[in-house]
Length: 170
Image (tube, rainbow, N blue to C red; front, side, top):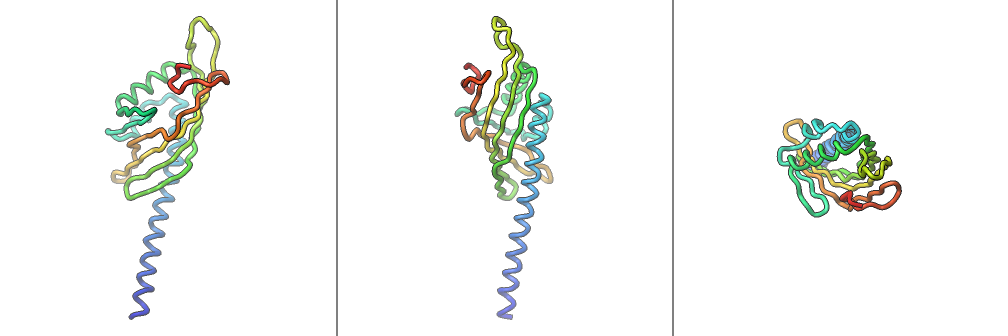
């Protein structure tokens, strides 16, 4: 019996670690696929998608300011209205899971063709943006929803190949 107890305890610990690893692997697969969908939703200016994947208490922390879900959706609709086309890609850098909360570090790149920003200018412009964010996802039942997005490093923006302030004011 004395020899069996350590073996059983070790086996239980192994099963627990394997189950946790399996949950992390499932979550990583989920967020990798979800970030591809998020990028496509940006490309398609699909605000309904963003509304469907976020929690009611969703917040964004960017440039030291926090905005709530309604403010984030309003800002997104405003930005989409000023955009002809957009191509976005998001890469998952790391994933952590603690129970029903997952944290995902991401790096993204966007190419934006805005509608004419300056009527005097009459030129098409190209804005590129590199961004780094941490996403917090929460699981309720079988569904994961994004609850928080935090800028982890200032965005790098360029207009026509020249540096631009992240707030778009050049």
